[in-house]
Image (cartoon, rainbow, N blue to C red; front, side):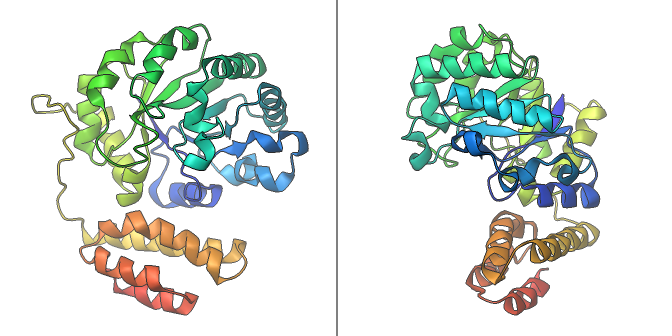
Length: 329
């Protein structure tokens, strides 16, 4: 079972991905990069692609992702990716943000079956054997994806990554595991599960309940615990099994307090990330913006994380931020 890093816009950028592998190793088999809008395909500029330049991605195998509803532009972008040596491309069919979905992109695309199929056809044509999609159960309904299974199975996708929520849920509420269980075995393409994997027990639970899964994709849970990918990889490779009866929801079993050594490593990683963003970005606002997003999830790794996070969010100067982050315990 393969592990992958989810595309989180503004978070899992190339700087984060390369810095992460330096501090925590290559626990991920691959990453899907945050999306590139297809609206830019006709006027592709290098700055729009800098996040997926091969030299920027380091040793972590990266799959570019695009978002849009224009088949011709999808083909243009796929051809551009080939010029950079890529043989895979992922289509975002799950972005929940209203300003995206209401335009028929992201989670809004599957609501238009004809356009959705046109995009699948274009993607498979442009990137044979390497085209995949990331999708939710639907934008408003949990049944939309189920109705699209006959369409999806007409195309030889590399894989289908499923986040079993609706777009309207955003990232809140429980994932619909019962609905996922009804459809997971109906796809001809390999299925990767994504959504609310927060502990090793969650990964083992999913492996036991859905034995045909080809992979697990980690997102916010891996920000809350940067060691989670390596801990899951170790558990899976050792053949560890979920020890309990299967319930209806992910267990989210609480972990023991983190060791001082692990906390120090997370702090060292955060400081390295801060230094790199300081070198790449211009002015305190974008640097603080990136680090505030980072700590929104990672602060929970520390006992006093909630208190320090509030201070980080109020920081308006880099010097203030630097002093506050020294207070983590």
